[in-house]
Image 1: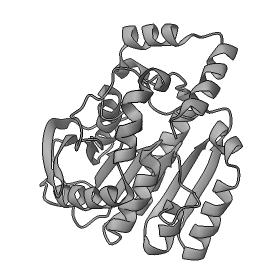
Image 2: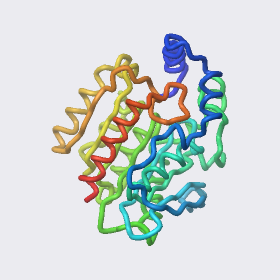
Image 3: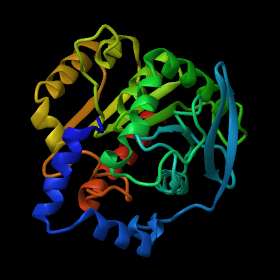
Image 4: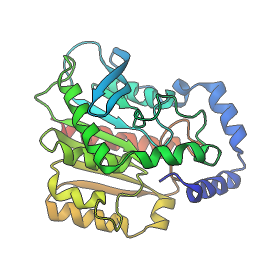
Length: 288
């Protein structure tokens, strides 16, 4: 989970690579996110829109992108702590180019429309993000999941004969599990990338929901997250094994918390591409 500890570890990682946060920001801003993300092979033409989705608690500002023709499996993306922003739209568009109808949501819509902050340096915006993160509870996540699944199932570009996928980053990782539990008959696959608080000692720990879900899973774990909670991966393995559900659980050696989004200060293209390829493989089989 994004916090001061992971920020300190990520800063140390950058110092070892002799890169400052300011240098990274200048490079990413100058290059553009579309250049940072590799091009999609055989990319389909897509249609995209900003859209407001009614929920039991209000209206969620979101981004929806899908292939311009045909019906395709739906996917819900839960952003990391920094929320809905250009990097998440770019990642969603890339997935849509591979044949999926993709919804990226603003998980903080009850408090603020996106954009939420203008940096991915948690230390600089922690005072803004901490109360917002706390406002997204297990109950609100499951209510939202049902609303977003209903939205996808109402879209002409979504193939309702196929299962829906869900994927999340950082705080979005555990939300994918709650999404799978909220609508188990519709969610066929879930993927968590450097997810935080997947295994806790609380009654609402996401791993306790595994017996209620039907989704196949991918857990791509950051190296420093594993160092700080090495037992979590084993608890997850046991939970999925007991439920009889396939789960690929891997620690990405050398990859720091937040390595997947291209606007992250610790973005690792090689490891991010590995995780992306595993995501595509999961969706190809589990959403059939």
